[in-house]
Length: 302
Image (tube, rainbow, N blue to C red; front, side, top):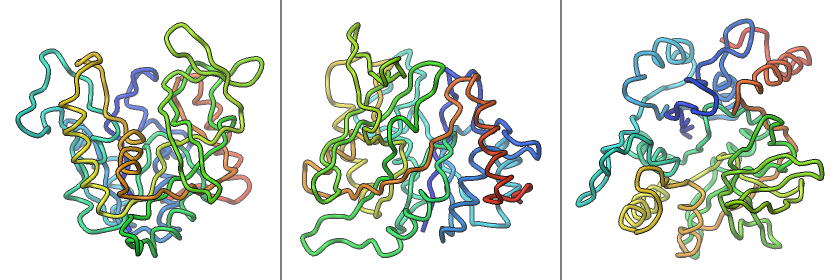
């Protein structure tokens, strides 16, 4: 099984390359804990999706630490890697989004079942154990649909007190399969719970709403869907050509609509930890220290 780690974003709200910002006294990054948990769950390969200009930095830091523990490879998310006849809009510097990041790892993943996570999110041991158990036996169903999965978190366990966040807001059917997912890019904590902004209007969200943190499991055929729907995204009209993005959750929903897959939602009560904003870092560091003190992780991972 392969773990794909999306690490190409620069973290504009955070103010730097937060994927390799130490969060322990031993210098570990958040993604070190993800890799550690993935190995424990049975993953045997990791693919880092990064910007090409960050290759040497990643290899000298993360790669140097984990290459002796798990097979590592690197995939580059390049702005110019788009299918003909499409062209990069003049003036665009923003990456194409998380769906394109996954597609960038197509050659590295090959024929393997694979999981996808963000580099700067701490998902918890349970998430990787559930992903590993699912992907170990995931095969095309008898009706021809691909078995995908998503680890779902309670919204309240994923919010920050320091601004808005982007989350995939999910609904599930009676059997625990994903029914719909809508990317909300401005969700915030409120005195009454939570809400998202759409334009100038505010809409309440229950804090127990299931949300996606881009913690997914796929079979190799998923790449066909990402490829097809990215081309459709580029051909579609509307939106700011310099800013619009091809989101992973939206691509998955399109694959669901066309009957390519069904997505099992794997619930977890784990509390998400991440550094969307600089003010989040002390809280994440304290949370990791507690887990080390409880014996969940060793003082030194590698």
